[in-house]
Length: 310
Length: 296
Image (cartoon, rainbow over all chains, first blue to last red; front, top):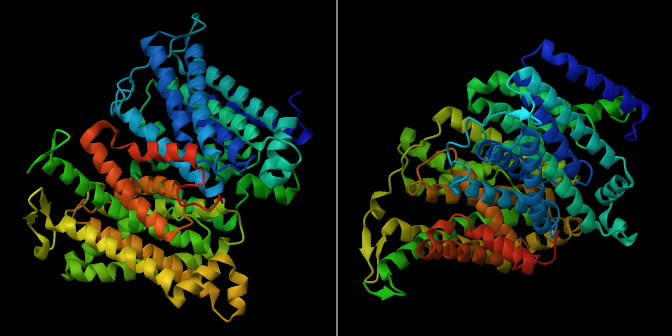
């Protein structure tokens, strides 16, 4: 099932066990935040790690998913699961527009276009009335799952977040290890060759872009319900940088790397949050160290040493 | 003063001038990006941070050493250019054989470090920087009132852009540079030190950013975020113009500044996003950019 190799199966079981045990030892709200970011990073990795498309505007999908989930939950009284799905759909719809525009150019231009488009989304969210501008959407109710189960307690919410995370993770694993995923890797390695073999590479890129944006929206929507707030922070450029860093640090193009990256960056943020701008400096230093010394990321380097695929 | 399309000439030309000023910065910054990209094949994400650094060097020279604005116009680009040489030698030079993506990510990280350090040192609010006494006040041109300093910014930027274009297009140094952009191995075989040329190109590109930063200091306050707010718009400018042509990036920079200024008159809400909208239109109609020679 899900095309697991033995290594992936064992690694997944370890991760699953960790997700189950962790809330008994660590603060559940912190864990939920990490899981949301881990899913976001996995979604980003789908694009940069498996197709080689370096988007610098993924915060737009994450943030928009958050806004839409928060808005529908608060103003329209959507159940949490419907609100989260609506958020994911908003991310995917925005991704369709971004993707349609940005895959017209490659490499660095692709990066600059996604960055510029996400800046446009940021301006839009700053001015539009439904986002609440600088205040954001506050006091978003977690509501009752399926209209029945209250999510007020952190443990109940944690179960939902874990399920969303594991679902997203398995979905990405499935995509990557499908025939579709093989074509994506072919595009990453040699796009003209993939074209000459008869694949419409632009269609593949657009579809995977939408998938990645949709899962990012899923993560953003979940996060806004966890914290009961959706703000400009999640749609700002710094967030795009953060998800790139998580993916890079953990290992671009590895299945489990982005999760590890999210745990590490989330923990660093937790400790350095009071120090303000030092967090940005630390992020920058980690970026530089990664690029100079371990481009494959922590898990990528480990996998190469142990001759495993993670 | 008279009326055009129901708008007073003072308002119209005033916004046009503001647009030209923004255009002056777009042109200088996208010119630097284009030069660096042509030679090094990387997009310098740290460009905005180095623009900010230029403004801070000017501020520090005035504050601590009493060196006036005019000297800063010369010294700040040299200081930041020297810093650029270090960045190129220590970090960027090790990435030339790799995918473009790594250069992007590295310079992105460098920008975070530089801006974060500036924020720690000076806070986010920024410091004022006085307009040099020679350029205070303004001139009444009949159809509008022009603050002298703003006129100077447009003039200085346009002159520097013109000089850079002349050097690249008309001198033998520029010919070597263009040749090395096309085929570095061949140029090296003629006995030209290409790696050194690459380093100096990077230094020159970031020196242009620093020069723009000094020009910007009296207009915007000197603050750590001044570069990052500019650079994203400049990336859109670069996508619109395409980085293949030096003159193209200068013209696109000024042109889009004017477009932005006019939008402020006719549809103020759209002025923050108009350049991005233009980018979308250009992507739909001419994907390679206005002056592009095919995508990279």
